[in-house]
Image 1 (cartoon, one colour):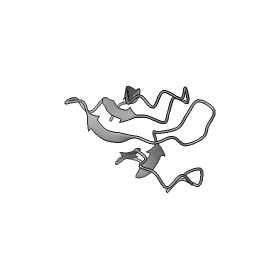
Image 2 (cartoon, rainbow, N blue to C red):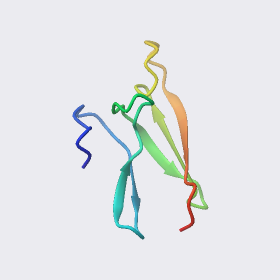
Image 3 (tube, one colour):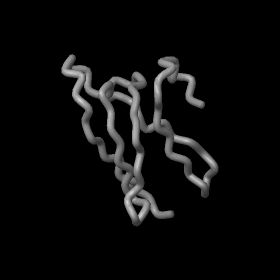
Image 4 (cartoon, helix red, strand yellow):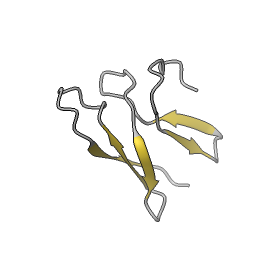
Length: 74
């Protein structure tokens, strides 16, 4: 769905039903694509939580929890 995604791993997208668009969430600060797993929306649908071992390239292999806050009205 995203031309940057060539890793073949698990990725997380957020679908906006109003604009009918998809946004790749598992993107590193440098713009490259990482991976993610177990996405969960908060009860108010304003925050997306997920785990990733690959968004932070520190060599530790630790599974970290990430938060993507939706800064828009739906």
